[in-house]
Image (cartoon, rainbow, N blue to C red):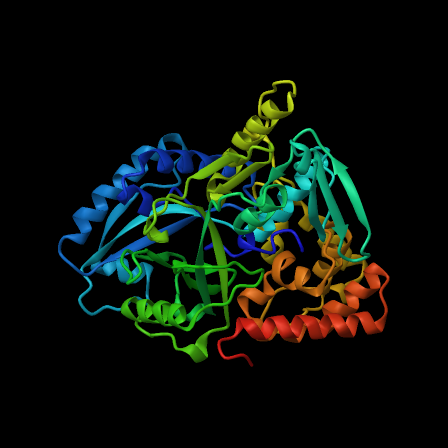
Length: 475
């Protein structure tokens, strides 16, 4: 499928050290994540921003308890800190979070973490990789591993999903970085491979921005499923999540379960003065965490979010677990192992100081185009030369026709879904508005890719079928 089709585009949009992991006593993971959080902000300032979080206090003990914990969080961050935590009075808390339920509120604790756009960072990382010499192949399915039956894996057979053409890729090392689908790839090389993934589903609901006025996010420290829950301002909307539900099987398009939606609505009602209802949901979507198995009977909420590198007896390198915040460190560890296995020359990792494509320190000046960083200049120039490209794809969303053209020309978008869910975030923000945008996005994509009207019509229908699943109960 497309880059970022799965888990990578369905996160809680946070680059964070993990306050919950601190409570679990996983200091090592927190320290690593806080360092990587700082490096990501340095390397991709157009996509990673500081965000204030407030933990509302309704019990007398919460202010000292969370206050001490978050001061430790600041201390562990050291020079990579995003801002100092502080205890807020009741009045200060309500000033920062006007929508917060005031009954019984004693105050709050404020701390800082990072926010980002996951799919945009993924696309910009892919472009960075291409600039570094990588060959990228979108919509190419691996159908077999070469050499697995004779001993060591020596490459893969891939099929172009658009043309059906198959080709072989030879390699000194093969890395399996397929998230929750990792075990399926491992079984291509070894049918007896023991499963290592414990998939867990996380659901998010998106509401109108009026549910979360102000610029701060809310961290609800306790939910029924043992997680913390966030309510976050994101692209002019309110994003609320997430859940932690163990799964028996994984799919490319996981669906929010009714009980997960209920849990999020109930938790939001505990903290927000105006409780959101099902009818207020603009979009609902799920992602699957590729957690690494632990002891039998362990809940997925308690499994480590650290990454794990596994080398099968046929030499296939699999990396699983981890989280967006530590993606750079995950890649470094994985490449070190694969390079050793392949007998490659030892080299220093360059990504600690590698600027991500679009790097720009003041991207906010580009308004809705800020996530493109320095590319925003070219997109604006496109609309200057072709003013019709400044037309909105849908009312209520900032995305323009120029962005659909850009996605096709420079970001390997091949389907309407690529444009409306990952190059822009229309589908995740407002499913109905994304459906409104689909016909025009299909026309633009058809013109850019040399497709006909029948293709555009079929693409539109395919996207509409997908988008209906982002609304509880359909449309």
